[in-house]
Amino acid sequence: MATASSRYARPARHQVPSPARRQVPSPARRRRDLKAPMSWSADVGLCLAGLGLGATTGIALTAETHSELTATGGLAMFAGNLTALVGTYLALMMVLLVARIPSIERAVGQDRLVKWHRRLAPWPISLIAAHVLLTTIGYAQAAKTGLLRQVGTFISSYPDMLAATVGFAIMTAIAIVSVHAIRTRMRRETWWTIHLWMYMALALAFMHQIALGPSFVGHPLARAVWITVWLASAGLVLGYRVGLPLLRTFRHRLKVTAVCEEAPGIFSVICSGRELDRLDVSGGQFLLWRFLARGIWWQAHPYSLSALPQKSSLRLTVKQVGDHSKALSELPVGTRVMIEGPYGAFTRHKRRSRKIALIAGGIGITALRALLEDVTDKRSQPVVIVRASRAADVIFKDEIAQLVKNRHGRFHEVIGSRSEVVFDEETISELVADIAVRDVFVCGPEGFVTSVARSLLRLRVPHEAIHHEVFSL
View 1: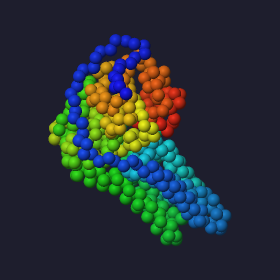
View 2: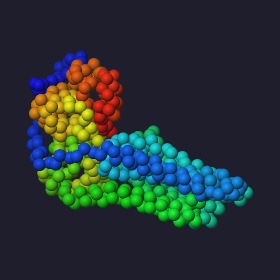
View 3: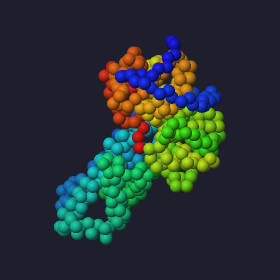
View 4: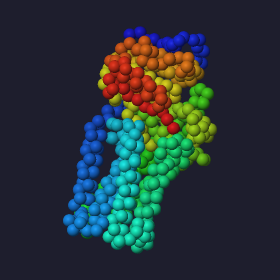
């Protein structure tokens, strides 16, 4: 099959040629052929989570006797205990969803795990709020006193109740700032810092439950199981979010060697290190980067690799859209770098068909370029489509063209603003006539990815053949 490269625009208009750019050497082929992620690991995790929820509910149901339920305030107290256990268990599941467990993360993808995390979020805080209200009502009924007086009694007379109150206040504050309308108005760094307090809130809730929970006071087995579950969860979080990143950082010893402008507002950071070709990263994945420079050392941000690692160097490419990404353009040479990851399921391992198509919008071209490099099978005959407002925004054009040529594929650029150039299912079908029999990888801003995915479905591309990665703040 002949290799083709073209500019596409509907309607047609004059295009300014893209400036030639430097070539970056291809990574050494000493890289190991990484194994496909274990898809069954997500199913096992889901089953364990379901069994845990059932066991948690069972602990609450078996903790109450008939006489306790029929006593004054007994039903409210039972409901309060049940909502507390289920609420804190779901909060624990929220934490584990973003614990960066490699086997699950590689099979499911961080974007989907984060989506599940956000969808689950309203339930724990709602159930814990219900626990606070129902327990207060139950004790007030038993003591024949008012709700406010009972709250005062709790705080002044019950062990660990003041700490639990602080924990509940922290959870409530985090829930408020996580509302989309509020979160989108906050700096990412501010929101992230506030979010970290959830670990403190859960620790306070745990101590409160162990000290006063009806399911644990006088029930040593239930108490031991609950402690084991929480300690194991804490171990997973510390191991995969702290221990493993530190291990990889010390092993590879990354530091910044150059910062190169690729296009206006887009630049690459070149890092050197040891045995980087041994890093278990597939094309299309991203890392969390912490650059140990003044003002940003405490922040970790996700950026995709724009090329597979070489033995002693790797490259990430960033668009200036926030304070952190802007600061990277001024990184001093020699800055030390800590990494966490790799993450993401936007990889060649998701392929179901022999042939593929890759569609990128804006800065999504970075992940697409690395993914294309990782697909070495010439039978894939990749069709690459890059959508950009200006020709100058198509970075790595020469590199992508060479990779496509080596794989006997085709490379198309769709250049122009949304009002001038249409990019819909008609455009896609004209550029890729056999799109319905290909696996399609789509990468770019959320609106672009959503629009392209809808077009692909209308073109009868199977849902399971559409793979996407969203670039967002």
